Image 1 (tube, rainbow, N blue to C red):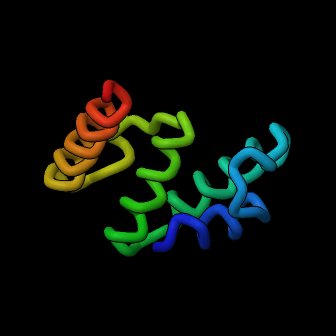
Image 2 (cartoon, rainbow, N blue to C red):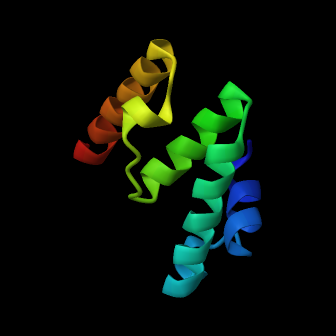
Length: 86
């Protein structure tokens, strides 16, 4: 999943600064619905990661059935925390 493609799909633009608050809320809701319906593990994780980066925190235990996916999500969160600290 390409980041710019996902921004275009859910928010109608690839420019994060141009996304209006109401469009952000609608796009996030659309992503949450797609996340719930997605069956492919990789696409599901990519949607979760984008939601996480946008500040939408989904409970890991309910988001991921597979413990390996939960561990991958925790590793991603740790990585993002380290990047933000730099």
